[in-house]
Length: 364
Image 1 (tube, one colour):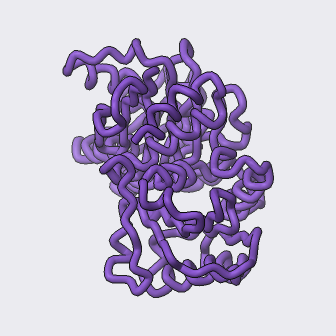
Image 2 (cartoon, rainbow, N blue to C red):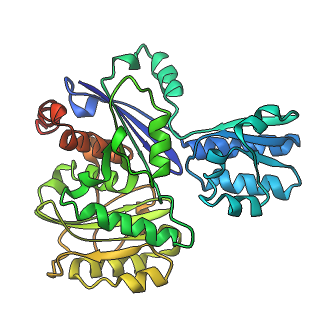
């Protein structure tokens, strides 16, 4: 069985072609610029050329592309966007318009002239197929697709994006499915998870697809590291470019978690939060008040910080920490952590894949 797992972050998009007939270490891999970084560059080129922009496509990851669009507007050029593309910047289209973006219908977009058109999307299967094809690898032989993106969810008007996101995390955990609760078959993605929906909609429809949130995928992937897996009790932190999510796991069961904006954390505060996560003393209100997403304690029984496993592009935030963090490297490659989490999630939610995937992963 072959699985194409794609973990789409802010800085990079990490691609794993997993074959159950091969050792995991021999899986083919790509680490490429993220879609939002690529789009930000393209917008910058249009700005330098003095061109008005038309953004079409679907809702995708913001951040760099949003900042590039703001700079384009500040420079004095126009930005038109179709509704789905505009929701990349904010789910509230009135808010998008207030920033200077001109939201137009698909029909209106088709009638515009003298604009530089750019298509927005996170999941570019065609580009990946071309890249693999250059090395004689045919992605048409892949039987299962899996993709991970970070999704705040489309919060109702007047509801905090941060609160909506954390309530979604808590709701998924209450299903009792563990980290696999954050993975969905294409047809089961919640309507509020608009970025997951968009990524799934742009993937080929001729094969099953599993979509998952990036941070839980990274934590699940960290458990593929043999040293991490050998511990019954572990704290795993995914320190991403934008968000930090940490779980306390007891024999694979979630005892607690917190999620914060990485940019608002320094080493001392992150260490304090990890200590509180182990102690079961985290305060949701306190974390939310400092612009984090929130905290949840399911089992407040204190635990020793015997193993703090860290992954993510900003894991160096804990370099030299008194917590003695262990840098998780599933199958020897930290960059593929989220992809390995996707593969493991597929085995957990798709029974017809379980034997083949677990046979390949557990043989190591």
